[in-house]
Image 1 (tube, one colour):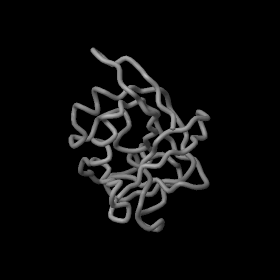
Image 2 (cartoon, helix red, strand yellow):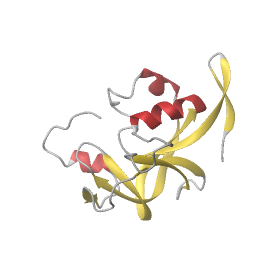
Image 3 (cartoon, one colour):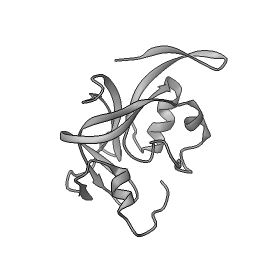
Image 4 (cartoon, helix red, strand yellow):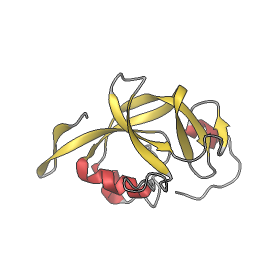
Length: 148
């Protein structure tokens, strides 16, 4: 597993690469995400994740497989992953009951390994987002969405 040591204010922390494609991206953050995550993630660059995304209503779901999904790559400290797990409703002790699963995958761009949260429900749930971009899908909407 890729991890690195990097200096965060006042201490050293193990960090992980995390590729995101929805409400965890930069921009107006979800009010449920909290300042701990926002202030402790470090943007690395834009990225491409192998797969497709589906519109689940107020959030997207990543299906690992063929295709390209637009995302952003972050470094996050080790102690932030459990916070994100709760936000994404991923419980490592209950994979069947989790809404998402956290997987370690090779990105298309950059060519590196990173954690992603993939949809854990039926692959047919939601509506396909053919652009591969949650932001493009949101820009095309006319109704207001609740923040998640």
